[in-house]
Length: 321
Image 1 (cartoon, helix red, strand yellow):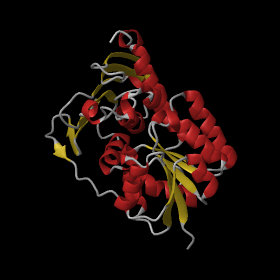
Image 2: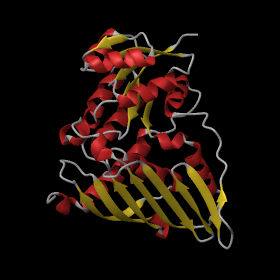
Image 3: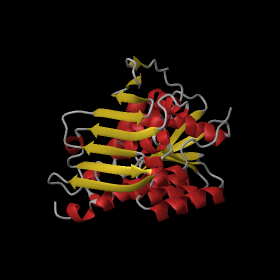
Image 4: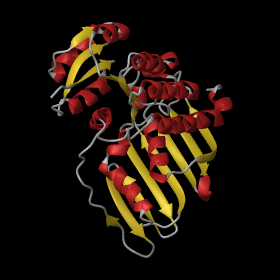
Protein backbone atom coordinates (compact mmCIF):
# COMPACT_ATOMS: atom_id res chain seq x y z
CA UNK A 1 0.00 0.00 0.00
CA UNK A 2 1.30 3.45 -0.94
CA UNK A 3 1.35 5.63 2.13
CA UNK A 4 -0.17 9.10 2.33
CA UNK A 5 2.80 11.46 2.72
CA UNK A 6 2.15 14.29 5.15
CA UNK A 7 4.22 17.39 5.82
CA UNK A 8 3.93 19.71 8.82
CA UNK A 9 4.10 23.49 8.63
CA UNK A 10 4.86 24.35 12.24
CA UNK A 11 6.21 21.80 14.72
CA UNK A 12 5.10 23.30 18.06
CA UNK A 13 2.75 21.91 20.70
CA UNK A 14 -0.38 21.26 18.61
CA UNK A 15 1.71 19.55 15.91
CA UNK A 16 2.50 16.80 18.41
CA UNK A 17 -1.24 16.26 18.94
CA UNK A 18 -1.73 15.70 15.20
CA UNK A 19 1.39 13.55 14.84
CA UNK A 20 0.32 11.22 17.65
CA UNK A 21 -2.90 10.51 15.73
CA UNK A 22 -1.14 10.00 12.40
CA UNK A 23 1.34 7.55 13.92
CA UNK A 24 -1.58 5.27 14.73
CA UNK A 25 -2.43 4.96 11.02
CA UNK A 26 -0.51 2.38 9.01
CA UNK A 27 -1.21 4.12 5.70
CA UNK A 28 0.39 7.45 6.67
CA UNK A 29 3.98 8.66 6.58
CA UNK A 30 5.12 11.88 8.25
CA UNK A 31 7.57 12.81 5.51
CA UNK A 32 8.68 16.38 6.22
CA UNK A 33 8.46 19.28 8.65
CA UNK A 34 9.02 23.00 8.18
CA UNK A 35 9.68 25.36 11.07
CA UNK A 36 12.17 28.23 11.39
CA UNK A 37 13.03 27.02 14.90
CA UNK A 38 15.50 24.09 14.69
CA UNK A 39 15.02 23.18 18.35
CA UNK A 40 11.30 22.81 17.80
CA UNK A 41 11.90 20.59 14.76
CA UNK A 42 14.35 18.38 16.60
CA UNK A 43 12.00 18.04 19.56
CA UNK A 44 9.20 17.01 17.22
CA UNK A 45 11.32 14.38 15.49
CA UNK A 46 12.64 12.92 18.73
CA UNK A 47 9.35 12.97 20.62
CA UNK A 48 7.32 11.55 17.75
CA UNK A 49 10.09 9.13 16.72
CA UNK A 50 9.83 9.92 13.02
CA UNK A 51 12.34 10.16 10.19
CA UNK A 52 11.33 13.29 8.32
CA UNK A 53 13.04 15.82 6.11
CA UNK A 54 13.64 19.14 7.90
CA UNK A 55 13.24 22.61 6.43
CA UNK A 56 13.57 26.13 7.79
CA UNK A 57 11.14 27.46 5.20
CA UNK A 58 7.73 26.01 4.31
CA UNK A 59 8.09 26.83 0.60
CA UNK A 60 11.35 24.89 0.48
CA UNK A 61 9.55 21.93 1.99
CA UNK A 62 6.77 22.13 -0.58
CA UNK A 63 9.28 22.49 -3.43
CA UNK A 64 11.74 19.82 -2.36
CA UNK A 65 9.68 16.99 -0.86
CA UNK A 66 6.96 14.78 -2.28
CA UNK A 67 3.82 15.35 -0.24
CA UNK A 68 0.17 14.42 -0.58
CA UNK A 69 -1.01 16.72 2.18
CA UNK A 70 0.07 19.17 4.85
CA UNK A 71 -1.03 19.94 8.37
CA UNK A 72 -0.71 23.64 9.16
CA UNK A 73 0.10 24.44 12.80
CA UNK A 74 1.56 27.90 12.37
CA UNK A 75 0.53 31.23 13.98
CA UNK A 76 -2.96 32.31 12.94
CA UNK A 77 -2.07 35.23 10.68
CA UNK A 78 0.19 32.93 8.62
CA UNK A 79 -2.53 30.34 7.95
CA UNK A 80 -3.73 31.99 4.76
CA UNK A 81 -0.32 32.21 3.09
CA UNK A 82 0.66 28.70 4.15
CA UNK A 83 -2.63 27.12 3.06
CA UNK A 84 -2.78 28.99 -0.25
CA UNK A 85 0.77 28.00 -1.18
CA UNK A 86 0.12 24.36 -0.30
CA UNK A 87 -3.11 24.23 -2.29
CA UNK A 88 -1.40 25.78 -5.31
CA UNK A 89 1.09 22.90 -5.10
CA UNK A 90 -1.82 20.45 -5.19
CA UNK A 91 -1.54 19.42 -1.53
CA UNK A 92 -4.52 18.53 0.61
CA UNK A 93 -4.70 20.79 3.67
CA UNK A 94 -5.67 20.26 7.29
CA UNK A 95 -5.69 23.71 8.83
CA UNK A 96 -5.59 24.40 12.56
CA UNK A 97 -8.24 26.68 14.00
CA UNK A 98 -9.10 29.44 13.54
CA UNK A 99 -9.16 28.86 9.79
CA UNK A 100 -7.81 32.31 8.81
CA UNK A 101 -8.21 35.90 9.98
CA UNK A 102 -10.76 37.22 7.47
CA UNK A 103 -13.83 36.00 5.62
CA UNK A 104 -12.25 37.07 2.32
CA UNK A 105 -9.21 34.86 2.95
CA UNK A 106 -11.44 31.93 3.87
CA UNK A 107 -13.55 32.27 0.74
CA UNK A 108 -10.45 32.42 -1.45
CA UNK A 109 -9.04 29.23 0.09
CA UNK A 110 -12.35 27.40 -0.34
CA UNK A 111 -12.54 28.39 -4.02
CA UNK A 112 -8.90 27.40 -4.57
CA UNK A 113 -9.36 23.98 -2.90
CA UNK A 114 -12.28 23.26 -5.23
CA UNK A 115 -10.32 24.42 -8.27
CA UNK A 116 -7.39 22.17 -7.32
CA UNK A 117 -9.71 19.34 -6.18
CA UNK A 118 -7.93 19.24 -2.84
CA UNK A 119 -9.30 18.50 0.61
CA UNK A 120 -9.51 21.56 2.84
CA UNK A 121 -10.44 20.62 6.38
CA UNK A 122 -10.40 22.69 9.57
CA UNK A 123 -9.27 21.13 12.85
CA UNK A 124 -12.20 21.72 15.19
CA UNK A 125 -11.81 18.88 17.69
CA UNK A 126 -15.27 18.93 19.28
CA UNK A 127 -16.78 17.36 16.13
CA UNK A 128 -15.01 14.09 17.00
CA UNK A 129 -15.42 14.02 20.77
CA UNK A 130 -18.10 11.48 21.80
CA UNK A 131 -19.67 13.68 24.48
CA UNK A 132 -20.37 16.48 22.00
CA UNK A 133 -21.60 14.04 19.35
CA UNK A 134 -23.95 12.64 22.00
CA UNK A 135 -25.28 16.08 22.96
CA UNK A 136 -25.97 16.90 19.32
CA UNK A 137 -27.82 13.61 18.91
CA UNK A 138 -29.98 14.23 21.99
CA UNK A 139 -31.03 17.62 20.65
CA UNK A 140 -31.74 16.23 17.19
CA UNK A 141 -33.87 13.48 18.77
CA UNK A 142 -35.97 16.17 20.49
CA UNK A 143 -35.02 14.88 23.94
CA UNK A 144 -35.28 18.37 25.45
CA UNK A 145 -37.88 19.81 23.11
CA UNK A 146 -37.51 23.19 21.47
CA UNK A 147 -34.32 25.02 22.39
CA UNK A 148 -34.83 28.22 24.35
CA UNK A 149 -31.31 29.07 25.57
CA UNK A 150 -27.71 27.98 25.07
CA UNK A 151 -24.97 28.94 27.52
CA UNK A 152 -21.28 28.14 27.43
CA UNK A 153 -18.18 28.98 29.45
CA UNK A 154 -14.49 28.32 29.15
CA UNK A 155 -12.04 29.19 31.91
CA UNK A 156 -8.35 28.67 31.17
CA UNK A 157 -4.96 29.80 32.44
CA UNK A 158 -4.43 31.17 28.93
CA UNK A 159 -2.84 34.47 29.96
CA UNK A 160 -0.09 32.61 31.80
CA UNK A 161 0.44 29.78 29.30
CA UNK A 162 0.69 32.18 26.36
CA UNK A 163 2.83 34.83 28.05
CA UNK A 164 5.83 35.75 25.91
CA UNK A 165 4.60 33.73 22.92
CA UNK A 166 3.17 34.67 19.51
CA UNK A 167 -0.35 34.13 20.88
CA UNK A 168 -0.18 37.48 22.69
CA UNK A 169 1.27 39.30 19.66
CA UNK A 170 -1.60 40.58 17.47
CA UNK A 171 0.51 40.59 14.30
CA UNK A 172 0.83 36.81 14.57
CA UNK A 173 -2.22 35.76 16.58
CA UNK A 174 -4.92 37.93 15.03
CA UNK A 175 -6.64 38.02 18.42
CA UNK A 176 -6.53 36.69 21.94
CA UNK A 177 -8.28 34.04 24.02
CA UNK A 178 -11.57 34.34 22.11
CA UNK A 179 -9.85 33.88 18.75
CA UNK A 180 -7.74 31.01 20.07
CA UNK A 181 -9.23 28.57 22.61
CA UNK A 182 -12.57 30.37 22.52
CA UNK A 183 -12.95 29.43 18.87
CA UNK A 184 -13.64 25.85 19.95
CA UNK A 185 -16.54 27.03 22.11
CA UNK A 186 -18.17 29.06 19.34
CA UNK A 187 -17.68 26.11 16.98
CA UNK A 188 -19.38 23.71 19.40
CA UNK A 189 -22.40 25.98 19.84
CA UNK A 190 -22.96 26.51 16.12
CA UNK A 191 -22.31 22.89 15.15
CA UNK A 192 -24.41 21.26 17.87
CA UNK A 193 -27.42 23.56 17.57
CA UNK A 194 -27.38 24.65 13.94
CA UNK A 195 -28.31 28.14 15.14
CA UNK A 196 -27.16 31.42 13.63
CA UNK A 197 -26.31 34.42 15.85
CA UNK A 198 -28.36 37.53 15.06
CA UNK A 199 -27.16 40.02 17.65
CA UNK A 200 -24.36 40.11 20.23
CA UNK A 201 -23.46 42.37 23.13
CA UNK A 202 -20.10 41.90 24.77
CA UNK A 203 -17.62 43.22 27.30
CA UNK A 204 -13.96 42.47 26.66
CA UNK A 205 -10.88 43.05 28.79
CA UNK A 206 -7.22 42.71 27.83
CA UNK A 207 -5.91 42.41 31.41
CA UNK A 208 -2.85 44.51 30.59
CA UNK A 209 -1.87 42.57 27.44
CA UNK A 210 -2.12 43.44 23.74
CA UNK A 211 -4.96 40.97 23.11
CA UNK A 212 -8.31 40.05 24.59
CA UNK A 213 -8.12 37.84 27.67
CA UNK A 214 -11.68 37.86 29.06
CA UNK A 215 -14.88 38.26 27.05
CA UNK A 216 -18.44 38.11 28.33
CA UNK A 217 -21.15 38.00 25.68
CA UNK A 218 -24.92 37.75 25.44
CA UNK A 219 -26.31 36.47 22.15
CA UNK A 220 -29.62 36.39 20.35
CA UNK A 221 -29.85 33.50 17.87
CA UNK A 222 -32.35 32.44 15.25
CA UNK A 223 -35.46 30.51 16.41
CA UNK A 224 -35.89 32.84 19.43
CA UNK A 225 -32.97 31.27 21.27
CA UNK A 226 -30.96 33.39 23.72
CA UNK A 227 -27.62 32.65 25.34
CA UNK A 228 -24.41 33.68 27.04
CA UNK A 229 -20.76 32.96 26.30
CA UNK A 230 -18.05 33.42 28.92
CA UNK A 231 -14.44 33.14 27.78
CA UNK A 232 -12.10 33.86 30.70
CA UNK A 233 -8.38 33.58 30.08
CA UNK A 234 -7.27 34.64 33.54
CA UNK A 235 -8.10 31.48 35.47
CA UNK A 236 -6.06 28.98 37.50
CA UNK A 237 -7.17 26.05 35.35
CA UNK A 238 -9.25 24.74 32.43
CA UNK A 239 -12.98 24.49 33.13
CA UNK A 240 -15.53 24.05 30.32
CA UNK A 241 -19.31 24.02 30.63
CA UNK A 242 -22.43 24.12 28.43
CA UNK A 243 -26.14 24.17 29.10
CA UNK A 244 -28.70 23.51 26.38
CA UNK A 245 -32.14 24.39 27.69
CA UNK A 246 -35.37 23.34 25.98
CA UNK A 247 -39.07 23.50 26.79
CA UNK A 248 -39.06 19.80 27.81
CA UNK A 249 -35.71 19.55 29.60
CA UNK A 250 -32.03 20.39 29.52
CA UNK A 251 -28.59 18.99 28.78
CA UNK A 252 -25.67 19.98 30.99
CA UNK A 253 -22.00 19.45 30.18
CA UNK A 254 -19.14 19.98 32.63
CA UNK A 255 -15.56 18.95 31.87
CA UNK A 256 -16.53 15.88 29.87
CA UNK A 257 -19.54 14.81 31.97
CA UNK A 258 -23.00 15.01 30.38
CA UNK A 259 -26.35 14.84 32.15
CA UNK A 260 -29.88 14.93 30.75
CA UNK A 261 -32.71 16.39 32.82
CA UNK A 262 -36.32 16.19 31.65
CA UNK A 263 -39.01 18.34 33.22
CA UNK A 264 -40.15 16.80 36.51
CA UNK A 265 -37.49 14.05 36.45
CA UNK A 266 -34.15 13.50 38.16
CA UNK A 267 -30.92 14.14 36.20
CA UNK A 268 -29.56 11.16 34.28
CA UNK A 269 -25.82 10.95 33.76
CA UNK A 270 -25.13 9.93 30.17
CA UNK A 271 -22.94 6.98 29.19
CA UNK A 272 -20.48 8.15 26.53
CA UNK A 273 -18.75 5.83 24.06
CA UNK A 274 -14.99 5.84 23.55
CA UNK A 275 -13.79 7.96 20.62
CA UNK A 276 -13.01 6.05 17.42
CA UNK A 277 -12.30 9.07 15.22
CA UNK A 278 -10.32 12.29 15.29
CA UNK A 279 -9.53 15.24 13.07
CA UNK A 280 -6.43 13.60 11.59
CA UNK A 281 -7.99 10.23 10.79
CA UNK A 282 -10.92 12.11 9.29
CA UNK A 283 -8.51 14.14 7.12
CA UNK A 284 -6.83 11.00 5.78
CA UNK A 285 -10.22 9.36 5.11
CA UNK A 286 -11.24 12.46 3.14
CA UNK A 287 -8.03 12.32 1.08
CA UNK A 288 -8.72 8.65 0.28
CA UNK A 289 -12.33 9.40 -0.62
CA UNK A 290 -13.64 7.17 2.17
CA UNK A 291 -15.61 10.02 3.77
CA UNK A 292 -16.65 13.55 2.98
CA UNK A 293 -14.76 16.40 4.67
CA UNK A 294 -16.33 16.59 8.13
CA UNK A 295 -15.38 20.17 8.98
CA UNK A 296 -15.16 22.11 5.70
CA UNK A 297 -14.09 25.69 5.25
CA UNK A 298 -17.70 26.73 4.67
CA UNK A 299 -18.50 25.82 8.27
CA UNK A 300 -15.37 27.49 9.64
CA UNK A 301 -16.46 30.77 8.04
CA UNK A 302 -19.53 30.72 10.30
CA UNK A 303 -17.27 30.49 13.36
CA UNK A 304 -15.05 33.27 12.01
CA UNK A 305 -18.04 35.57 11.41
CA UNK A 306 -19.37 34.88 14.91
CA UNK A 307 -15.98 35.72 16.41
CA UNK A 308 -15.76 38.97 14.48
CA UNK A 309 -19.29 39.92 15.57
CA UNK A 310 -18.35 39.49 19.23
CA UNK A 311 -15.22 41.60 18.80
CA UNK A 312 -17.16 44.31 16.97
CA UNK A 313 -19.85 44.32 19.66
CA UNK A 314 -17.26 45.71 22.08
CA UNK A 315 -14.77 47.31 19.69
CA UNK A 316 -15.18 50.78 21.23
CA UNK A 317 -14.56 49.54 24.76
CA UNK A 318 -11.70 47.25 23.75
CA UNK A 319 -9.70 50.17 22.37
CA UNK A 320 -9.75 51.82 25.80
CA UNK A 321 -8.32 48.91 27.75
